[in-house]
Amino acid sequence: MTELRALYTLWLREIKRFIRDRARVVISFVQPLLWLVVFAAGFGARLVIPGIDYQQYLFPGIIGQTLLFTSMFMGISVIWDKEFGFMKEVLVSPVSRFTIFLGKMLGDSTAALVQGVIVFVFGFILGIPFDPVTIFAALPIMLLITFGLVSVGLIIASFMGSLENFGAIQTFINLPLFFLSGALFPVSGPGTPEWLRIASTFNPLTYGVDALRTVILGSAWTPLHPLYINIGVVVVFDVVMIGIGTWAFSRMK
Image 1: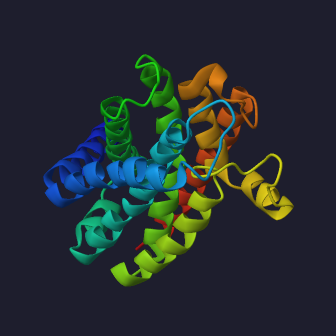
Image 2: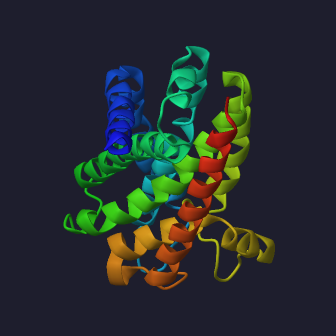
């Protein structure tokens, strides 16, 4: 019972922290809108995707991008908690490190999921063709994506002692994951460099974005992998990252 109460408390704390951070909420509205409008307009005439409009192709990729950047950024909460002594108090409490990590991970994942849903709202407003019902099929996939990515952010933050170091490492990891995921352009097919195709196969976000496109675009999209493989890879990534994250939190003092 104590573990469940601690899990809920940590989850709720992260949700309240996200809601009260007005600057972050505003940015969560502005950033995907710029990608869907400005980037799609600038590159849509140059990138031809067979069978679908480029903005339609870009839409699931921006959902993946939003989940990536938000999830990884959430690790900064660990830095703040260490700075103000909250983490020390939590770590000495009679609660397992697994519960502590899971509580923060679930809270941050929920906040990241909310920002992903905001992208769906913009897609509807901009008139991007997709079946609104597909959001209910996409939500579990989005949540699975955030589990692993939030865990990576928390793992990095658990070893960092300053915001500057965390920001540098986070950017170093974020950009390759983003650009090698196929979010902005195809990473397979005619004309794609072999090194790019190989590198993308080792990127867990590639499978997440491909799963989102499969669900959102339906028959208009030819997936890189079957949906069950995409989801399976994401689940394995989540389990590994949660395991490493629990170990990383157990080493914090």
